Image 1 (tube, rainbow, N blue to C red):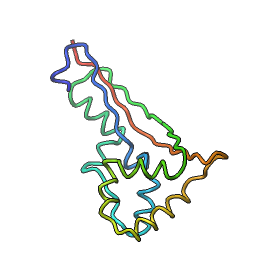
Image 2: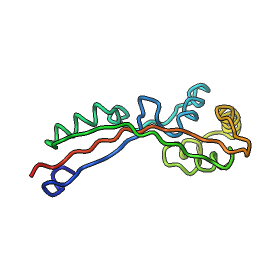
Image 3: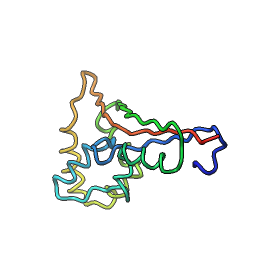
Image 4: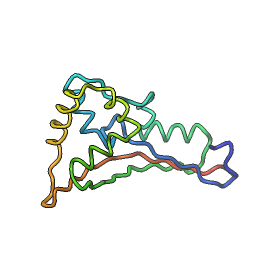
Length: 138
């Protein structure tokens, strides 16, 4: 990106904090590991560390490199809404699609206990990402 952005332009990105437990479906991944199942990981999870991102931007010759942590929350209508969203997710959906129905049922039950529903049945998940930006030299 530093090579193709015009001089003075900003190069920015973010990544879920995989090593720090910031992935949106971290509760599900914890339950999978607890059941002895392989929880899918990206090929280079350490690349999402804030210091690794800062080093990459600095090493690319960008000026004024800044990093920050982003914290977000997402509320689902209920556990079924959350689960339907997970099944369609590119990170864990394909792994879940290959699992035996008995394992899926156990996983759903365990994962449901990780969330406290509000008075209307809604559940909220938190996630954390690391962001980095820098300016291409003039």
